[in-house]
Length: 598
Image (cartoon, rainbow, N blue to C red; front, side):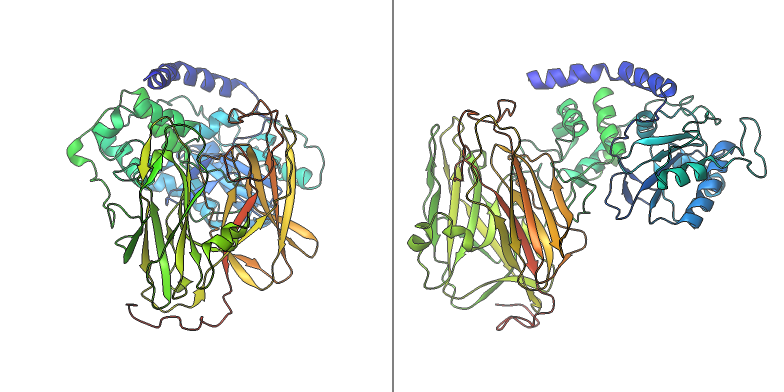
């Protein structure tokens, strides 16, 4: 309740603070400031990130345009011509508009046509979030950003519009001169030219939003997967009554990017499973709270999404395997890892395309992993080696933030007949005693298996984190033994984990695959590249991990301790999991053909 009241109090000051920020934006020259990352949709609904990975990018041109505005028309013409001439290899071109989506088709087309010819997206920013951050006051204004997204030029593209009339041609090419100087490593002169367009903020006022029209579609699309019955989120967000009371807290955690949980630096990689809200979506939730959570016409609100199975994220499973005995969890103390072997009675090879895991004591469960124990290998032999279990293939798992495994058609994980499952159970007492009886669900492939998914990892066991070290940094590498395609990366550390980076080293040159600069132990997230990453024999996957063992780390149980590898959360691990497959390998022997596998 205190948190909710605090969030509400903070949001109650929003109108005054927003007005102050807008006034500052109109009077503060932006040159030299670094623009914050943003995510906005274009007129077709495609998402665009300012910081998105764009190999070879050395500059970004960002224009602020409105329909029926001569300064914007001049800027759109200039940008379209410059982008068509200079290309997009070294320069990223983006245009932003608050009202173009609401303009008449003719006015919108006049603005968008020269941009479209040069493939420059026109992004929707109805709340002027980016203009406020960039200190832009008038239409037709451009910001030229360097490699670090710092503003090096601020002003119009040229002098075609003088504030009163639109000339046929320009006499001064401010944009071209700024780009030439920036790409040549020279100072830009002039670095700022007076804005000449209309007042961007003259008609700016907060949008009116409500549950039925604005918030329900947003929460259903981005939040319902976890915020529904039987899933790990602490509350449901499916209907108005669910969400209205949580509106201030929802606004706070989304504005701070704590929700949805996602920690990959957008400057490196693009992700199939990215969990991010656009600036407009975050502002919608902020306005919903600030305006008192209006419900709108509930009869017009969309129905909550229907999931294939109310419990399992893989749809209806083919088999469910349960722990043989309930696991008691004490209210206090340290619970050592527990292992339970289960024999599902596999009399033939199983080809698994999807798996999900469901602890019954989610509040006390740190993680569950179901490993495959091959025939002839005893659990006692594996567990007698401190790292022996890591050599086994993981078939399913659960931790806060993890997704179910849903492989695309043609890919599967093989369980050899006669194998058993070895459950690794890690519980964290939280003051309330509980009993857990975790279940794992599988769905077999129903199409021919073309490739077999492989689990792999980069690990380091011999690190020592010194007391009070806020930047303890270690590296490890794994050499790739055969060509393949990398499909997923999952960083893993404990409570002192601060950051982790994956790099691919080829012929002595490294490039970043994934950078997690703000690692959060509470969320075990897998990152799936939008396009699989090519691995070649002889490449190295290099892992760099940074730990904060100082008192400045609020999760640190004891900064005076030297920390080494260990299972418990107050110890540490350094693991960079990755999944891959070899697309050129022949179908695995014994893989199922067409039709359902029984």
